[in-house]
Image 1 (spheres, helix red, strand yellow):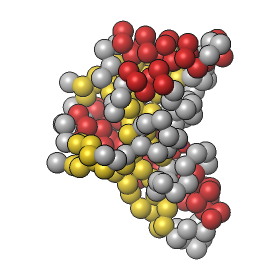
Image 2 (cartoon, helix red, strand yellow):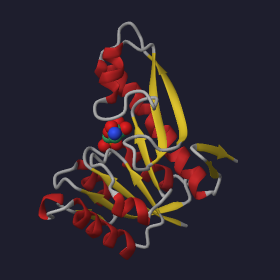
Image 3 (cartoon, helix red, strand yellow):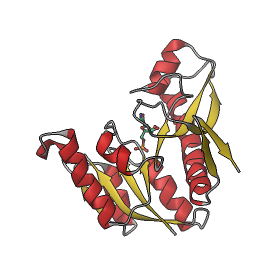
Image 4 (cartoon, helix red, strand yellow):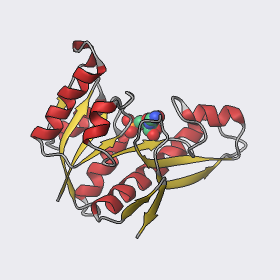
Length: 200
Ligand code: GAR
């Protein structure tokens, strides 16, 4: 079974979706460790409730991004992690992690990339006035929210939407496509050709 790490910073609903997919047998993988850079992240509580190894690594304890990521890398290696999932992890991944886990880090982003990278993507899309929003699962590379796209799902913007209601419907789709993308990865069905991901 593929050993996963889930990196989180906040409420952890995408972590929960991955946990649920494993527990209901949809996803044949195991979560070896959940790592949060934020001490009080609710995601850590969720992990503990399911008996998972949950670790807080305070980036402020480290002088450089490299030394922080070396610490994270040590935890990943100790837990024999094969695939890293970013799930609401709000730090930019640096060279240390990227080079050790090349094409083995995935991220979920609440917009149809390459539109609206960065923070508050749902609000950016809403304020821009798009008629179709959505979410993306992609490989992580050195460009912010710029790696090869694995899956995307559209969400129509309604006249009555606020940024919050739209974000809520996007989140429902995130919870579907993230486990789906991870399943494709662990079943060896993702093939990178340049920046295209061929599925099958
Ligand atoms: C999710 O909407 C996720 O797509 C987003 O943060 C939220 C985390 O929620 N990630 C990003 O914006 C990354 N650029 P969660 O903690 O409940 O999974």
